[in-house]
Length: 255
Ligand SMILES: Nc1ncnc2c1ncn2[C@@H]1O[C@H](COP(=O)(O)OP(=O)(O)OP(=O)(O)O)[C@@H](O)[C@H]1O
Ligand SMILES: [Mg+2]
Image 1 (cartoon, rainbow, N blue to C red):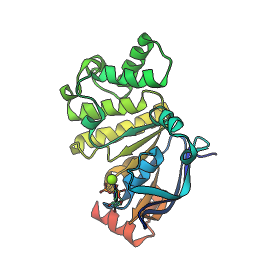
Image 2 (cartoon, rainbow, N blue to C red):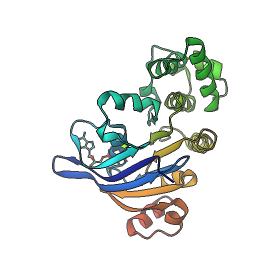
Image 3 (cartoon, protein in one colour):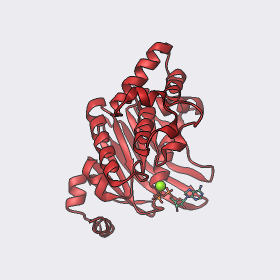
């Protein structure tokens, strides 16, 4: 089976220092790939490399990122912009930063569809309401008409997920998507990931340092330390029988 995303020998540097060092992994269809590791280990840098949204100080020195058969590193800026948002969605830690406070959630989601599809206004509205219901917002019509600040933190997180999904992407990059939520809401959010994976066939690159949380939902995992991948494989295998000393320490820290 061909992989949906294949990161090969990715190296990203700040000046001469590699902050991601020769990292390779594959993500298949409808799969959750967890990227775990301590603070500063290069998790966010990997996510931003896939999206080609690295800050100017960070340079990709080597490697390829093949997504749906194309090397993202070779795409023009315009093709990459089309890919982002349409084929690859993104979810970050702080949902308020994903939205403009001056427009309703419905307006902002429809805006994404207007930028990426030919749908009519009526179809855009229908699609947005459908997606707001897919992310299991209790009252999609209310969320549609709400301004970002009118929703609770948990609801905003779901609205951000809806924004990432509105163009039916095959992959979502989620960077610490639940860190701003309390534990009960974190669990619910993780359940939503699994639900969306099964129902919508979406794959996730799920970046987090909380091994306990992600190991419940991920299929595969890679463990990073100071930019290097120290271990990777099926979650049950890595968590159940870690081979690397650092992985063992990380697991112990979250038990
Ligand atoms: N704009 C930047 N300029 C210089 N160095 C940077 C920049 N962004 C990140 N780095 C460095 O790259 C390394 C990896 O950072 P990254 O944000 O990818 O780590 P992380 O694993 O996501 O950490 P955290 O768990 O704290 O979010 C760190 O050493 C960081 O200091
Ligand atoms: Mg990070």
